Image (cartoon, rainbow, N blue to C red; front, side, top):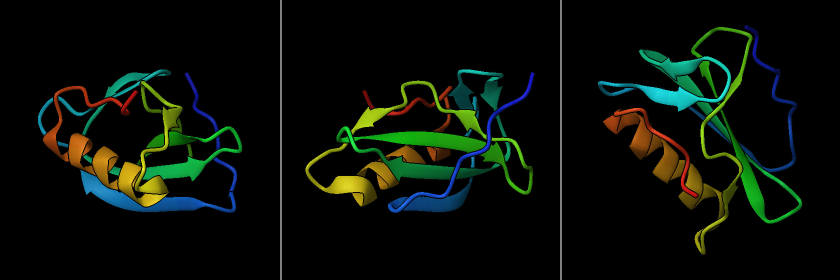
Length: 96
């Protein structure tokens, strides 16, 4: 199974995080654990795509629940919530 490459976008936030026990759930490969990179990208429809990769890898995977609606705090607030969820683990998903 292979993931997709996330194209650079006009509004995109990216951070490295260590997943908590139980990791993060992806559409393509199921749970991913360990050191991950999370990218949250704004879409023109008012939602945001959330992608995850093993830090340093080339392939990106879709975090289950993505795309997510943008909250009142915008892209930064959504990205912060996703990072919090992944750090907590438990098969973390994007907010719906």
